[in-house]
Image (cartoon, rainbow over all chains, first blue to last red; front, side):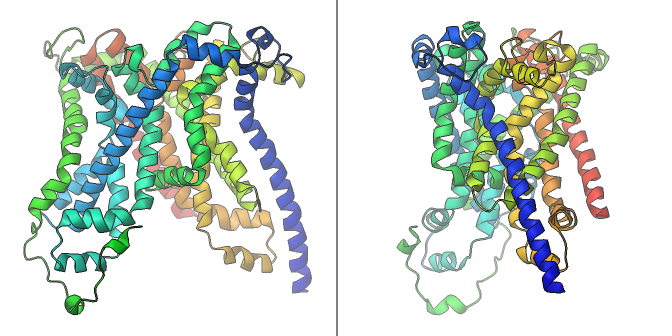
Length: 281
Length: 313
């Protein structure tokens, strides 16, 4: 009896799984649709884009060539790359040091600092754009990479990711090293950080992607087209193509390529990094 | 891994208990050194501006004049609370949050449940659903503005094939916000999707096996086991989603410029307009503070509701 029932449940489960898979594939295709359509349009000559069809009579890369020639998109790549690297490096460095201190060292005001930094998670960065703009204006740093990057570096969430990770590491090695006279800097650099690769990559990826895609803050501090980031540059020129839809879509595809390429290479790390950071944040 | 560089010696004293710190601030000096880089930047660029913004909100500060300008007391706040523009942009932000949060939670959960049952090809689904999330907002906006174009747009065409007359997506004040919400659903669903996939990994498999032996079908398993056990993940997803939706700016800034007829201007865009187009930074700072208050209130309320709902399960 029980075996019979279990067998029936199994066939039912198999059928159910088939249906599930079908529905999921349909949605996945729907989700890929917009990007596929953009790519399809970008490969058409501008004249062909007025017909809503997936077929292309004369496929061409001309639209990409025009965007590369007419806009500063290559400069924007450069700006975005410098700013995102600066932000990711700065975030990992400052947050790991702070996380190490909170996890391993005993000092007065430790609890106060812990709660002070934790409270910072609640402040949405958008709230600060007006005073921050004033600040960078008076520092004469508007239209510099520093203006974009510096406010993105101190990230309270990142400190807590490192803190949690360090708390989970065994301490035997460090105690031995302490007895051998190693100072904390040496322990941080030689023992703890090499073990913290997962936390480092999670924080670095999260900081890099967030910085790369940020629009509001760079929009406020960058008005010089020479050092605009990709989102700001694209947002600024988007109206100028008019009905040249192939060109518009080519600019979108070009703007998407760097991160998508990185994503395809490190898919697993990126998904886990962002999910992990979100989970703990 | 370079851990091997550190010599691990079975030192004779290793078994002795480590001496407890005599004073609470035994490591005061090294701690100051380790914390200095973070705290310096944190004070200079987060807490400092936060305090400065609070002060500025009580003055008639202007972008084109240095200094704070004349003291205004609660004048800026009173003006905002009397301003129809403030209330309408607050409503737009809330309306956007209401439109995006439920589908972004329910669909992400549904897709994750379906993907979890797929024996193979999980990387493909992760790719399809998560990739839009890493696209810059400007790229998403360009693609969707084209999809929404009247006459030429793919969406209008596809709906036309099945006999539905498409609305004038971004051009109709009533449809503009739902259109932005649809774009956002496509763009950010992947984030919630991977959070749910991670949550599903933590449910022990033998629970399913045990219930299958008891004759529970897949639908029963989902309803009785999976969804209740995902409660913690749902709380997290919901809170993160509400906060993210309240901060909306990029989509309307690029796709509709807050239009048509200001029908999609969000609160952040209102701050941006007042501060950087009208140069009224004192007023913009006051509106920022009110926005901060809204985010805190809504997340507190939301958190309570979700917590209570969870206890009942």
